[in-house]
Length: 373
Image 1 (spheres, rainbow, N blue to C red):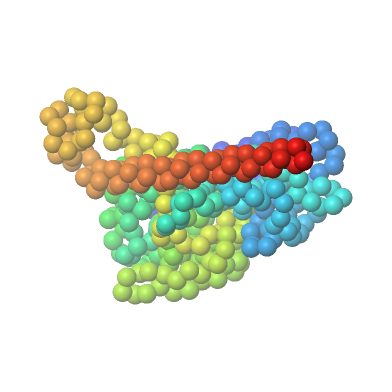
Image 2 (cartoon, helix red, strand yellow; image 1 turned 135 degrees about the vertical axis):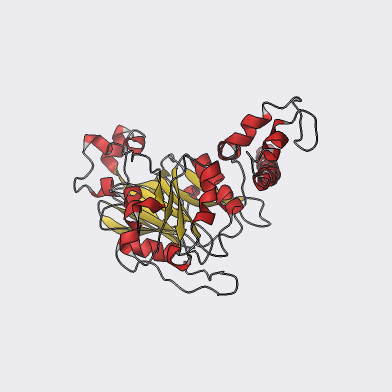
């Protein structure tokens, strides 16, 4: 794959490893992504009595973790797993008691990905402590710029480094049509690849160097699992074909899991998510559509709806073709969705607090009655 297909890759930023040990040593924790951010959360007693481990897979009745002692299962039970948004997910760091191997607590996260599933009243965790994200689309019917913006809002909210990867480049002779994304996202690296060709994915290896955690986000059939296998140099994930009529794919990944690769990085593969509901991503949305928000600040009226108001800088930008009208429509759509889902989450939290208060009141009343008798 020609280097001309790769645009503006920023310099790679690497953090120091835990405890002053240089990255590139044989420390298992360093290779698993252990960094000063996590090291500094440990007390002196925890340094002595606990082992930090990272969650590499989540199942219904257990989670799989790995650390200096290797991989081991942990049963899903106890207070640590009761709160839906605080319980461990793939990528989390836990502290296990050195003797009993019981999970004691989850360390604070450096980043967190979550989504609102269709019809749900609670957010679903996707992954934690991710450093870099490949937003994967393909050079066929699947390519959808509005979906890319949806993923990008999620990535920017988490504060991760992003790269847009367009797969199946060998199946299209017209690559220029996909370069329109560069007009709105000049700081977003874009790489065209044939995921089956290990040489064409070389430019992506800087995102999964030793100690770095890389997530792949994209809908089913775009080639995430094939790309993961090419980056890893082995068959880590199952793959399948797509339907020729609409380029839709089947879900080949059944659950989220972290895979280690020869270079020392970790790759997160996740089930395809056609319905990626956004919630609590206001900052990410603002960063994704910063150009529209900058234009909106120039409108004559502070409450401008950007429709037909006089002195609307946003509509003026559309008329001059500085701004794509599709982009404005998608911004409005995602803003409404975030507001709606955030309201749902707020109502759900209020209901939980009210129920907890009711339970505490009932218990207090019951104890009072027992004391009187």
